[in-house]
Length: 272
Image 1 (cartoon, helix red, strand yellow):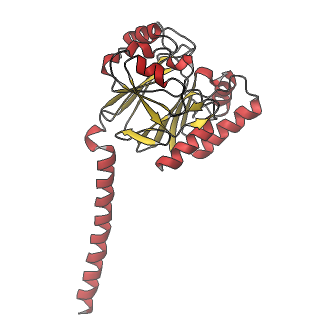
Image 2: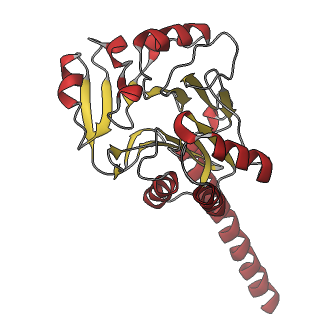
Image 3: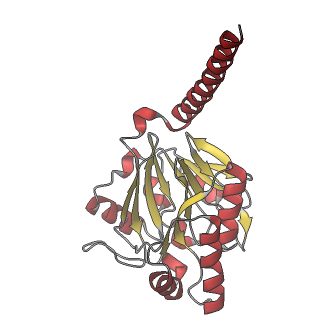
């Protein structure tokens, strides 16, 4: 009798363990999609004031193309529709396949390429306090005002706008390794933006890419910001656009394993 009772208890415990493992598998299967793992995530820097690939134009501004979970997104559009179009063609990106656009903030070096999509009726996510809503409507596009972190497509988020000035939002992509966070100019502070995204989505940061607005920042501020990002768990940092040489040189010298060199033409591929 005692042996049978012991056997039943062991069997029940094993069943519980396997049930928990199976539940976790289903959870990840539903969130990230086993069938999509092979496709992965792709980010391509279409516009930046730094050159990464030969034959790609540079311009003061930022635009990043993203493919993830079946969605094709353009994050910011750079300062010029012509530069955006030519670089996309050279890098093999079909801008006609874009599902929606995310604009980090209203400055012209991030919105100047919007006219390339005039009349296409695409959704354009902007901070609620942005001053370009009417301009976007006049282009035949659909502005979507953001006031809190929202999931805009499967595992793709537009984050709560923070005040710089101006008001600025970012984009975050959920992966098994953590969040890939794409920032525009980080006027409110890149560490603050990353912290807000992680808090709202409930995941650790994995990659941070974009402009950090630290071109003229003193070195002690650069060091503090980089170390804060690393302390949060960021594995790879790609400083683009307005980040400044101080950030790049400090990362390259002090944290080479975390530094990602970048510019117009950079392509990043990650497993989901």
